[in-house]
Length: 187
Image (cartoon, rainbow, N blue to C red; front, side):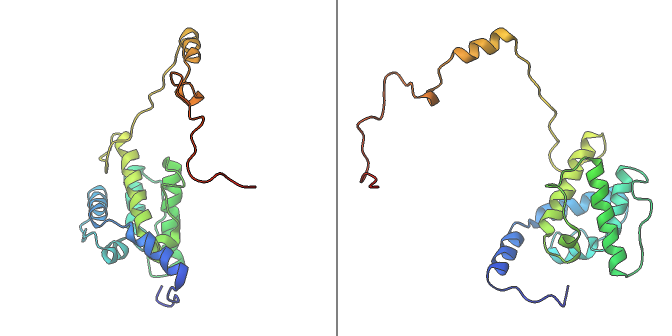
C-alpha cells in the first residue's frame, strides 16, 4: 500500500467521496461485535487505522465466519505473506456470499487489504450481523425483515383494476391545457 502513487484529480475526488462515507461509531460497533463473536480481546476503536490494522490480515474475519458457521473456512493462513493474507480475506468474502450476503453487501479483497474502502467492509459486517441475528445468533444492527407476501383474490384484483388513478390524467376535470410556462420550444 505504501508504494501506491498519490491520487490526483478525479481519482482523488472519487477516493475522498468513498472515504467520507466511513462512520467511526458504526466501525466501533462492528469491531465490538467481532470481538464478542470470536472471544478475543483487541482494540475496538472505530478509527480507520485501527479497523485496518485489526482486520487487514483476514484472520479475525475468518474466525468470525467460523463462529457463525463452524468450519466454513477450514484453513486460516498465518504469517506475513501478502498473498496468503489476501487469501484469508477472499475466503471470508466467499463464505459470506455462501451464507447469503449479496454482492452489494460484500467487499473486494483490495477494499480492505489496501485500505481503499473500509466503509464497505463495515457494511459487510453489518449485513453479516443481520443474517446471523435471523439465524438466532447474536446479531449486529437492526433485525432483518421477514418476507411479508400478500395474496389477493381474483375479485379484489379485478376491483383494483377498475379504479382510475390520477396518474392517468383524470383529476375531477382539471387539466393543464392552455397553461404555458416560459418560452415554447422552437424546432
